Length: 260
Ligand code: COA
Picture (cartoon, rainbow, N blue to C red):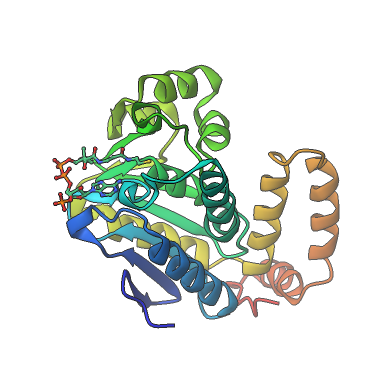
């Protein structure tokens, strides 16, 4: 697939996907969502890629939301389809990838932009970042998982306030809320994400993907996370990574995980 709206680079087993519509503050139109699905799918299939960093192009925005111009005339059926399709091919898809995804929030992360950052496994922000779910100011609600993931990350009360006021919070407040894990200067954002990614990439990718499944299970209706943990824990004992990890420890050397 040729991409019109995203850029991809690869360095040391770390893939960086950049949403590249800076003139529209990287707003998510249909084509961008489809391209992101394809890029995430391919990165997840590529065993050389250990971590994915997602960021926005330019210095102003991560993503300023879903592209309002595309859905302004939608009816009930089209609105329902928009949310369902987006959640399926991008937001839920990213959350359930077996490769870790870090959101590098380099500016505005609003509406669908914050929802995309929240679908990533964790978030790092630059000092100029601004985050919010402004949908109710447009007469709609967050439709890409925002009403579910924001309370999971910051708690129900803060999520309710952010959603109801449609306001923006700055990076420092987001850090206090636990919405982002770290805040750094803009020029240090990608280097910091790469440093964290590099630490992750030294570990067993098989165990990491099992950990993602187990942690996510805690937030899935009708799924017992403890049971998922037991199963995933047990499965690890059948992997080459487990053999290598435990042998390396006992032999007092650094593990070199085969990733299977
Ligand atoms: N959808 C479509 N286009 C968007 C967009 C969005 N979510 N967010 C920004 N843009 C476009 C603007 O229309 C403008 O395009 P134009 O130059 O062709 O007119 C361009 O990006 C630059 O945005 P602009 O509003 O001029 O920048 P600003 O610095 O004055 O304001 C924001 C920045 C983020 C405060 C403002 O763009 C904004 O409120 N965007 C919408 C945020 C939102 O409600 N998102 C949730 C959608 S559900």
